[in-house]
Structures are given as C-alpha cells and as structure tokens.
Length: 251
Image (cartoon, rainbow, N blue to C red):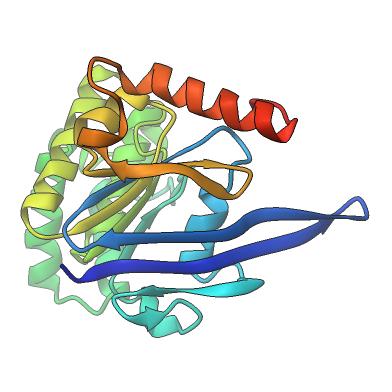
C-alpha cells in the first residue's frame, strides 16, 4: 500500500534557556494511504511539533519527511492537506456559510462546488440550522465544527487534526467519529492526536505513542494493546515505564 506520509530519522531541536531541547528525536513512521493514524503522548511529547513539521511550519534539524512522495519542505506538498489546529478560531463577524464560501474561493473552487460541498459539510456537522448566524454567536463546540468544515471544504486527501474533539459534548464527539469513518471510507488519510483515548481506540487503524520526541510503541490498534486490556491503562503503563527508564517525569 502506498504511503501518505513517510518520516525518516526526523529530528527537531531548539534552544531553550541556554539548553538544546530535542522536540523530535530520530523519529520514523509511515502512514499508509486510507488509514487513520493516531498520535498519542503526554504534553511535550512532540505530537504538535511533528504536525507542524509536516505542515512546513517548522524546519527539520535532521532527517526528512514526505507527503504523497513530496518533501514537506516544498510548499506543493501542502496542496492536498486539510489542517485543524488544537485551538481553532475563525472570523466571528461572518456566518458559517460565508466562512465556507471564502475558504472555497481560496482553493479556487467554483461557486457551485463550494455551495454543494459546503451544504453537505454543514449537514454532516449539524450546522445547517445555524449556517446563517454569525460565528461569534456559536458555542465552543460549534466553532470547532465550523472550523472543521473549513478544513474539509476542498476535500483534502490528508486530514491532520490536533485534538479535534476538544470542547465537544458526547454528540459532537460522535459526529467527529462518524466523519473520520466517512473520510476513511472514501480513501482519505487521517492523522490526528487526542487525549481522548477512548476516541482513539474506536477509530484508529494504527497508533504511535510518543515520549520525548521518540516513538516508544507503535503498531496496528488491533494488536498493539494486549488482549483484554484497554488502551488507557496500556498507554499509562507504557509512558510510566519510559519515564522511569529515562529518569524523567510522566508529563
């Protein structure tokens, strides 16, 4: 199966208070096309740094990464990506429908295509009734959903989601699960990180657990966790063992 994302010996370092910090440390990973790949790890493990490196926001110190065969250092690599940051926000003086129209025009979509795609996303994310209200009147969960609709307006082949269910109630989390399943069914690739381990367990094909910039456990979700054990206790045990071995904290 072809790879959507390939990461080879990827390292990112930066200076902090006169010390060199390794945000990513010789990381290797492959995300096959059409898979849902979950990134797990405590705060500071390198998850967001990895996403930002793939998006071209951060320059790798060593190693390389590619998206659909194109080096992430080249801007063309980002043409097929949709990205939802951890704390998304948007123009609150516009309505959801106007936001999607503007986003679609940025991608060069026709007015008819934007309307068709936008209406479908508004329906899928339960925003149709609020589509003509200003985004400034939305709850946090609704803002999260309209930002997600903007992320998906151009029907990207790789969708990168940083904590996509943050601020959502159980119904909102169910909508996101269904949306991810729909993306996978249409051959899209999803790379996301979340602290909601129950969500990860339900939707991921493959999981990688990061600690201090390294993948300390990775593999198919169906076989990574021992039979009879849930992901959360396995995750805690794995991080605790890594922290104890390296003499670090669990956070």
